[in-house]
Length: 257
Ligand SMILES: C[S@@+](CC[C@H](N)C(=O)[O-])C[C@H]1O[C@@H](n2cnc3c(N)ncnc32)[C@H](O)[C@@H]1O
Image 1: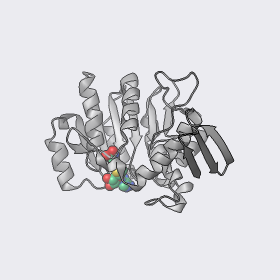
Image 2 (image 1 turned 90 degrees about the horizontal axis):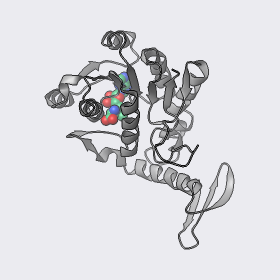
Image 3 (image 1 turned 60 degrees about the vertical axis):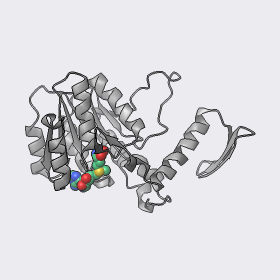
């Protein structure tokens, strides 16, 4: 995509696969194009590696964290399952939301390798009592069974997939974990931004097609009980989708109530 911004003329000229067009700067269309570039430059500069939550590194964009918070506060799950733990910041984030909500909610984190220093820091954290770590591949049937065993009958469950982001792996995770998701709740195939990083530093050409969004789209086509649905914005223009500054485009699969 070629983008030319003229702040004096207040226009943005954009040239991409859809052709060439010019748009006024202060419009949602321009905001969308600028956000795409912002996301790409941020990826090249490792922007998402610059945050912590309550002392632990969290590899998320703050905009996605706020949006996740909106959904979690609305759905009020009893259990959040997340694949992909890394330093544990996202597990601590979800556990902190439970604590603030006065909920006894629990967080289950699955990672193929929980490094000893990360495990020690997570286990020493104030919020560790509400966190369970499960070590192993998220698509290993034994690991899936262990996670299922940690969920009690009747509990409301929300799942976030943030481990290996190949389309095949995410497709496997969706099949394995979606049955645990309760109606009205979500399974989130994060990091679909990969589709926009095929010619960006630290990106790969194959990511154009090999990405979590593609897995989520195909899953939704196979499973009528799930619907791809961006969480509704709070106050925005009626009917508009707030999908601009995010690493999780096309990620949110809601289990129909
Ligand atoms: C992007 S990081 C997770 C970031 C974390 N959710 C956060 O927000 O801070 C991805 C993690 O997935 C883990 N991983 C990779 N392949 C996996 C697999 N097959 N099963 C489970 N975890 C895997 C890696 O070890 C790594 O810790």
